[in-house]
Image (tube, rainbow, N blue to C red; front, side, top):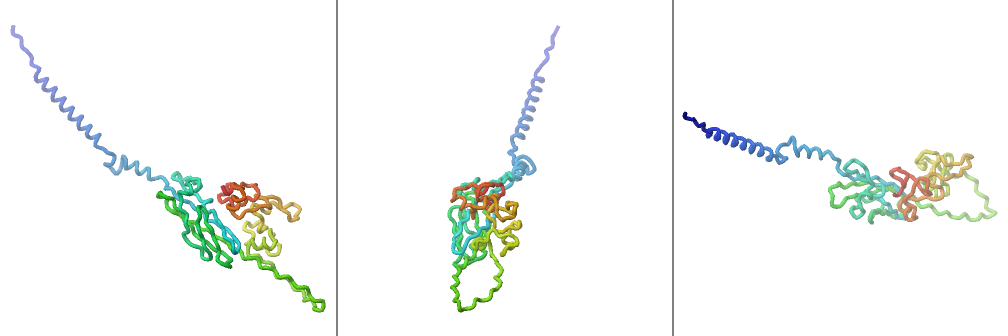
Length: 289
């Protein structure tokens, strides 16, 4: 009996063809996966991630204007950065001098005052009025963060220069033979500002008192030129005109944060002697922090 052998060569050849085809397909798949570098499509991948990151807020300076007063012939130091802040990338606000060291900032005069001169020392602007000038004046300062792309910003310092108190001339003793002049009604009292009222010994001036005017009573409580931090609610109930301690007490007052620091009273809080709203620009109850 003759036995017939079955050849397996065609099957082996078929198997090799299938392996080659599978390897080619795998190579194509791997090539397709590795060829995407994340920048091939403006609609997806890193392009989409970049679009998401651009939604953050840019850091920006948030400067606040200042209002100060001084007398004729006196210079005025203003710590202009004390009440300035920064808007961070997450939208929160932070104090400028808590975020940056003074050495990281450039403070300069952007617009000179019209009636005086201004100079910069560190974080302080010094204003000096022109000879004999009394009235309103202002200057603009600029802040720049060194070595960053944070845009520079400006703010205004408004200054009131009070007029000097005129000297009084003593009245000579009249001769008995000279008839006394007829009495005339005194001229109505007028104070240009609270410095003039204090110099005349009339502060605080209440509504109905000679010289009272709305421009002396900025908070509209019926009492003008009261010591810083004191309000009409601190008046005694018997109407005698004496005043108890308000926000900062009637015996101590500070013109600005420089005076508070020189007195060793900074930071000054609500209820502390000398506390006033002009020292607490952000209204958090703590001034000159």
